[in-house]
Image (cartoon, rainbow, N blue to C red):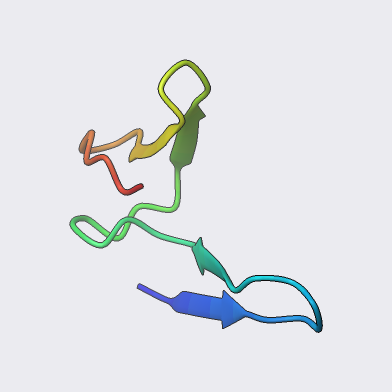
Length: 47
């Protein structure tokens, strides 16, 4: 699992996740209705 914190001048920090911390699957999906990001493989809600 890789976590990246990107910062730019005059902007807040952004946390990007490229894989699920539970199963290491890279198929992450947003749920626009709830604003969450979840793993399509194991269903873990990541954010």
